Image (cartoon, rainbow, N blue to C red; front, side, top):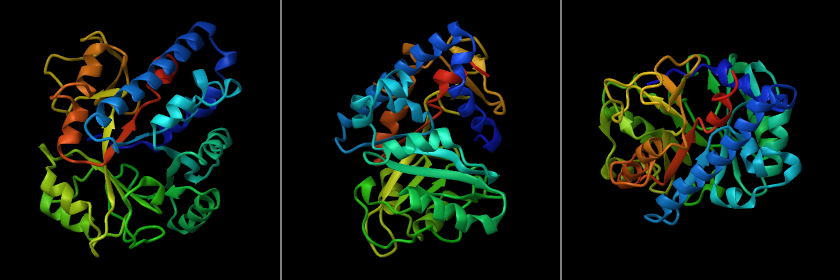
Length: 319
């Protein structure tokens, strides 16, 4: 599994705002790719909801996708906003130390009346967690603080932020969430299930797999109830913008540019490659058939999918 580097992705966002002073050709390519990403996400949602009309879709980062052609002056892209259920954002208030990202924060403020906003910041000092939580609460966001040693979403915190025992059947009801996609520290699937199930998190974001085994409907039914029997939501992480060389779909002879849609090395993540996500070969891996990743998520009975690396439209053309 990948280890999260909190400093890599944060560099993108001020740069996006400065695209207009860089290469015009790169800008145009990125704009076109952004429109393709919006359509990709809409197509994933439509496919999933043909099986489960209530299937939840949350893209992570790429906040500017809520606008037509990612241009704020062009207004909200209503069809896209009506497709997704929320936005996951990393490092809005903190990046180790307090470091507010005003450009993305303004987008989230505009989006929060229609979408659930979920922020996960890396906070180096545990003493800063209450300030982060307060800032998120004041904005009406739900939050997951990543403290030292948990940059890669590997650990189960001692308790949930805004602990809630009430039932949560819709994302709008959620007051907190768990983000734990790299469970290597657990000796067994049973230990992982037992410890996570004992919490009061309203939403869990976990991986489809534990080690090399797909979680099954029995596992999901267990996780979907809090200790008091009330409902919660369980979402599967999925990387839709970069290929990961440990996944079931990876073939031994694959490498950069082979196949041709394996486009660009992912700086900071040596086991991943940015993909031309609009290519049919990649999209067939992600959705639309019985062997696709989304279909496996559906078959396991997850409540939805948490889509990572949607900002591939930018990284394919800019550092």
